[in-house]
Length: 268
Image (cartoon, rainbow, N blue to C red; front, side, top):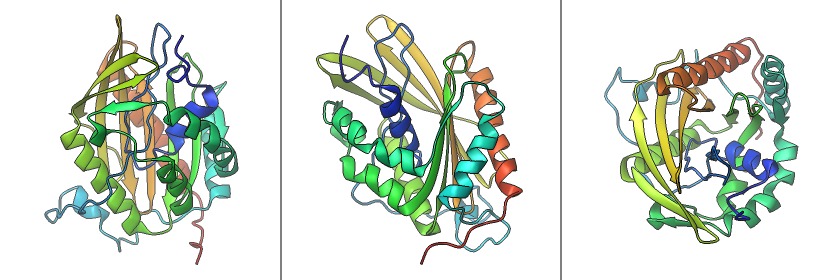
């Protein structure tokens, strides 16, 4: 069984949490039902798209006081634990725990090759950057639910907007790609889905992977409200529509929790 593609739970959790910008590419395990794992990928430079007034993206512009502000890591960890209490067996990782997992994530990432390279990894430094510019908390659902939830609060909202722009760039240019590790190749196809949430900006994708004779589908939902991004993934067990509804429900539950909490003052 390939060492790199059979990533440990700690590595999978780190990779999921540190893809809080939604800059997600899938990496599957070698089980009968591969489990896609988002990994961070940020182009060296990207322009924030200009959107028309009234469009969903235009609501991301800084200055809307009615939207969510900054929450520190302690608040996010507590919110995530509250959310996780509803699903027995969910594992929650706070900011400190995620930092401890970085070395294992780095070792794993070094064994991965992505084709085309522009759709792949841009180094462990970007994983560390994710934890520097935002407070993060992550939860991995038990195998029966096959999913994860990440919440990130950015001190600088412009950084969040730039990250979303980078994701839009990747979504548009990386519809198909492959990841190889230890001679095992997994092929991917990424497509956009229609989805809406109570957040001002919502994006959804369907990631299809082929690993030998094994095929897998995963839904990813990314919702942005003010300084906060909530990302949810669910593996498709029956239909994409069902899994999309589950991921959206996960996002909405977290947004509801956050909207009832006092915001934190951003670190100076």
